[in-house]
Amino acid sequence: MPPSCRWRPVAVTALAAVLACAPLAQAASLDRHPSPRGGGEKVIKLDDFVKEFSLIDVGGSGLSLGDEAVGFSEFSQNGQSVGTGSFVCTVVSLERHLQQCESTLRLAKGDITLQGFAPVIPTKFTLAITGGTGAYREARGYMDGTNVAEGHNKLTVHLSK
Image (cartoon, rainbow, N blue to C red; front, side, top):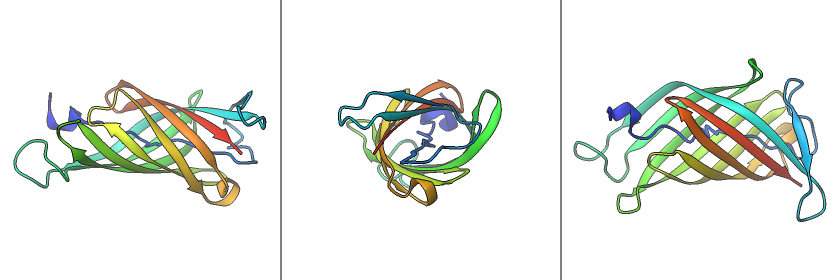
């Protein structure tokens, strides 16, 4: 597997989104689902396309502690652009093939931040929503991601209040 394919971003990229009390973007579709806390949940589904990506190899040749994946993504729904995102993932365990990722989603009404562990080769991952700005300043919840192809992730953001 070529080095650029070794650990595609959790785009986190994240790359994912939180809507505390406001609509995401006019193009974003929201589905309501019951929440264990009784307030309902907003679900946002995004296609995440990694547009810029770099691996930073800090140790010897090959995967080592501290190696980083850095990138920038564009998000779409039904073929329409709804935002962008960035991510940084750092290898923190070789034994567990684990990386720590931070990501920011930029949507029409503000930013959403995410954080958490992901596998070094992230076929599936979950990140916590840690906050946001603008309409998302009180955002909470989590985002699930699935890698469907090189540089393409399907993201499902679960927003709770």
